[in-house]
Amino acid sequence: MADHKSTSSFNARDLLVPYKPPEWAAELQSVPKYKVHLGNDDTPIHRWYLPNIPDDFEVYIKREDMTGAELSGNKVKKLEFILADVVDRGYTTVITAGSIVSNHCRCTALACRRLGLQAHLIVRSPTSNPDEVPCTGNTLLYRMAGAKVYLAPHKADIYTELLPRIQQLADKLKKDKKVDAYPIDMGGSTSIGVFGCIEGFRELMDQGLFDKYSDIAVGVGSAGNVAGLAIGNYLTGSKVRIHGFCVAHDGPHLIYEVNRLLEELGLRKSTQSPSAGPVNAQDIIYIVEDARGLGFTVSEQKELEFLYNVTESTGIVLDATYAGKAAFSLVQQLQENPGRFQGNKILFMHTGGIFGLFDGRMDSVIKQNTTKNIHNWMELSDDVPFQVQ
Ligand SMILES: Cc1ncc(COP(=O)(O)O)c(C=O)c1O
Image 1 (cartoon, protein in one colour):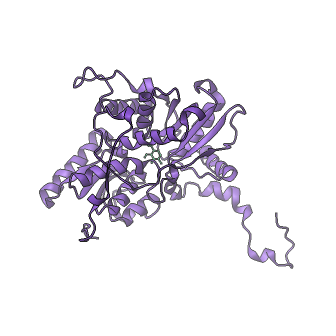
Image 2 (tube, helix red, strand yellow):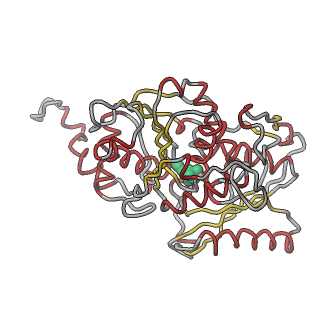
């Protein structure tokens, strides 16, 4: 497909809504000027009867997986601010990066099309052959959105390889196509994007956070989501404890990324603003270091069994990469380390990512557990000795 051309009647600027932050966030640096509405706000919270948790704990689930269908999860909250900035500043093209199965890349590519923008995606991939790139899950969806995709080595480093490549691609687009491209950091965890997660905290406050819950549990990747929640928690003087489960990277990565955002928002002592608030990631987030298991996008059998059991017993579908690993680790912490929680009413953030489930990883667990539930319809005939279970 050729680069998107806006129809004469469509102007994404018309979708921009002036943004006013909550009073407690008004002094932050980088407050965005506009927001564009892409996802559903006020997603529900309900009790979640997660199997195998100690009797004295109650777990609740915030359904951020219901912010939308194809624009779902926490990603869309960040993009509402980032893409508003893109449109406001007159860009027609964005560049971002992630893994080949990235939820952020899927969300960016689709949201861009809603706004008449073109997405370029630099993705870490096990193959460098375009013919071998799959048409499943997130990859199918961003390909359908006509994203331009660049295959990076599977283990390319974020800081020394991927982020510099975003800039190189921007320079190339400028030189070769006279196109100005707006760079978006991995996961949309930018100082503008984090306002989506600060707004997420305001949403939780409106839903009775302070009265109803003692602790929040959330999976951490690029760390924008946990940073936004923790910043809201800090600025409002809330006593809720925020637990960040490192499902994609290690603890030092979380600390580095959250501190970077704190600094960019003027909340951290830095050389640029020595008088700014002296707050660090570790002051505002209780970190669970070892929630990755065997590694990012790699699942152990017991994790896959857990996903199946959770859906089979509660009807909640978790992805294998983020919310699934975070919930698995939450159960472990509740069983083995209950003292880390401030109280007994735990709010788990379901951050979405369902399309990641369709990569075949679950096949053997599902077959093992459910093939017995599947029957040939001939078994319903009176001639066959079969009893409905
Ligand atoms: C489904 C899902 N949940 C959670 C996260 C983590 O959010 P963050 O990158 O803001 O830490 C991601 C990030 O890609 C995600 O896709």
